[in-house]
Amino acid sequence: MDISIEQGSVTDIATPLLAVNLFEGVAISGGATGAVDRALGGLISQMIADGEFKGKLEEVAVIHTMGKIPAQRVAVVGLGSQDKFGLEAIRRASGAVLKKARELKIKSYHTVVHGAGSGGMESAGCAQAVVEGAVLASYGYREFKSGDEENGAVERMSFVEMDAGKVAQIERGVARSKAFTLATTAARDLSAAPSNIAPPEYLAERARQLAAQYGLDCRVMGPEEMEKLGMGAILAVGQGSVHPPRMIALKYLGDPGSQRLLAIVGKGITFDTGGISIKPAENMDRMKYDKSGAAAVLGAMQGLAELKLKVNVLAVIAAAENMPSGNAYRPGDIVRAANGKSIEVISTDAEGRLVLADALVYAERQGADTLVDLATLTGGVVVALGTGGAGVMGNDDALIQQLIEAGNRSGERLWQLPIWDDYLWEQMRSEFADMKNTGGRYGSAPIGALFIQQFVDKARWAHLDIAGTAWIGGDQPTLPKSYLPKGPSGFGTRLLLEFIQNRAEG
Image 1 (cartoon, rainbow, N blue to C red):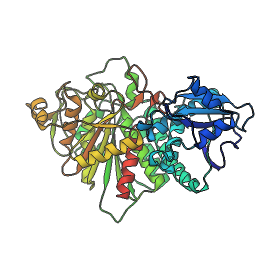
Image 2 (cartoon, rainbow, N blue to C red):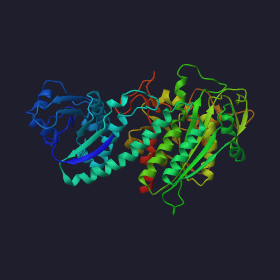
Image 3 (cartoon, one colour):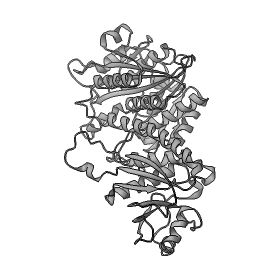
Image 4 (cartoon, rainbow, N blue to C red):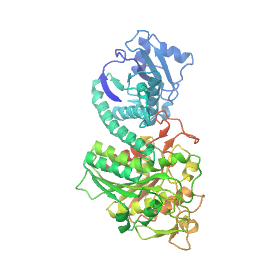
């Protein structure tokens, strides 16, 4: 979707649809909405008085202007409660307008910068949120669709801004939003790609493409090299598949004079049957989403390269397919990770933590001082938090707080869960190895994180369990958000970009 900016009055813009806004329970006064209401002879005020519009978040009412202003229609979108207003409300309101425009089969529309000036919010951030809401709401994975479905797509959104002094700020927000939305769209596409076309080598090829496009360093390790590096955990997970595993490293050096190195690590299980500990057939098709952590990491690398951030980042993707076969690893097997620790396999369906173990050891050995991993790791985090946010755990409270703040700004919420050391020895004690790879159902999200922590040495580390947020739909209850259509969410991509940008600026 093309994005443009026009300076002028909302009452002078010729457009199929003009979007303005109102807070819940707030009467119309000045601003763009007031100007449009006066030009329409009080039609918006009348609609409110009649109880047809209340300003609830994502509520949209459309008024035909009958030639009173050049705009053919006006969409009034609700911003929700004023005391709860923020960037997330802007995204959701903008996404609702986009959905209404698509419903009306409108190819282009104009909008004000929702929220600019409210509570001191600056125009650049508000404009970015408007674009994010609209572009992400328009998403659909269409790689294998035939026919004319694209004919209903909105092709252009234009901002209308009266104040010439704010145009440059809006331009900055739009430029930043393009990097964020392209990165998220790329992550969604990769997450949604079916497993028959997206085995581990597919993730490796995507990394090579990013390296070629943006001048990044790329290293792809196959089974022989991984064996030399002692990566017995990921090799075990991938040995049952005809598609060999890959350990993928992609490095961005935006601040070559600095020794600081952030590593973002993604779980890239391209399909998860559960292995010998096989999953039920129902909903197994969703296990293509088990690579969503890797997708978010690769999307973030694209975004930070677009933004040209002054920071050094190493992306590590642990890519494998977890399949049952005569060559698959088994419950009772003992494998050794790259740091030498031995693991007794209790369940082959607890494979994500195994591949992350080798990935984190590798990342820290490359000099990373900070590690952040993303993984669709446990069903337990979904039970604990539902689908409204992801769990975050780690060994550094300051790092965790920075990630939570980045998530609040991006709308990708995190909630900190505890890691208690006694879980390791009480629930993960093994008679035959250094540890078991699972401690059972109870406390599964913290125990999964505690397992992963055993493969971090001195670096600051945080683990994001995104199992409840990686995709939208199915039988799981989903919090309604206009900009999250059914399918892959790309969760974590924009959060990582916010976090990385803060690191670059700090």
